[in-house]
Length: 138
Length: 138
Length: 138
Length: 138
Image (cartoon, rainbow over all chains, first blue to last red; front, side, top):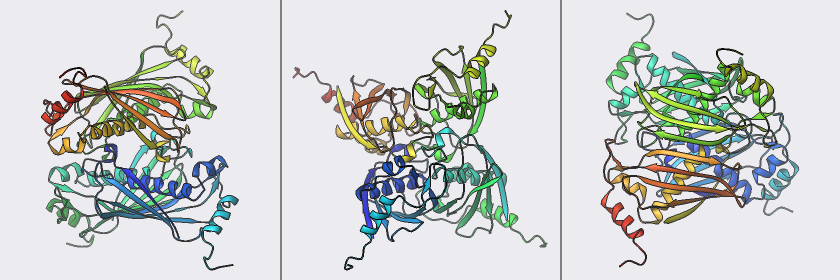
């Protein structure tokens, strides 16, 4: 498993008239989380796109347990639990004020600039093999 | 089952650098869909809020099959398949260019202005009883 | 002068915790207005982009007189007061509930797909010459 | 004059199909800038709202010189050039990649929770008097 923690401050723009963060914005926070996870593990997403790859969202889901509030410092924990195959699944937790606010997941697959499904870039596969190598393994 | 179809035009603001609509915006479109479903069935959400009720999202999920493009006329089909109990589940389909672009669902429960879970407002329950009355029934 | 009126329904996603529409969203509404103005006058923006042109915003400004509220039917009036030269200026008014909510303007110039300033596409210039021809002819 | 520099990382969600940040998002960044300016000078905006005050935007304008790109580290410089009176004007600069991307300004005035214009809260006025006291003065 690889994991990444990212912090962000809740913006006024992200709230709605219920006085809390609008639920769809958590999906944008998940994106912030996976961007940082990729960067911290040597695979900045901008470089992947510059190489002609795209990693669109195929599925997304979220459960909302407690509201996020304006000006909260929110911690997004992003986890890649399993070594990616054709599909890449990421799991997320959002915490603030010492509490779990939401959980979620997204599933992705690589496409090329024409929108056709493609195998992951070699650099991505090599890095994932390193990260998910059995610690006791040869 | 009750159902509602709503149309909207995709805005440039809703696209991202992949050249398609950013995935989180589908959740905002689902909200447009359920707002219209409630209005068409005599339960405008603004009236519910004016009465002190809120209907936050507890869970949301979406599957993305094909991209939505700038300037597309998108049709959102919103369905309430089952009579709501404490939880209200809505299902969504998004079509454009004669194709299914995405499906999704959200789950909701009523809270009061203090954020505490409450029973649905009486007008809501009465209307749901009418809408989901057995068609063969007296 | 050419003019276009467009209606839209205010989304919950567009509100903030002040209970009104977040001010930046008016700029997205201005974009809806100018998209419709171009379409109504035979110059759909998507066609301009397909032809390799982009029309980015160089300047934007807005004055906020009264709040826009959730579920309001908002009318955006977009005006091209002067025949475009290298710069294209559009003016906007936003009304709802019989009142003027906001005014604004944006200024644009054509660039190509590489981001370099270019002359307007020929179809655009021809159409503008028609639209701004002296009503008395010749 | 008081000044504040804030950094943020550009999100994919903030880009549009032109491949750059959608122009309206700069207004949300200006909000991030003024939130931090207020906090750094002992006047967190959340505290102002908790005290029953709101500080809506009356006017906003922006000039866009160069695009902001996905994953850029953007620096927002927020300046309060003049001691606020009934109106509060803030000026902004947005830099990235060693270049000025955009400038802008917003104008604000205090209202109460009912939306009526009010004088600034006493804590705000006292602090502004301190910050804008003549440096040579007693």
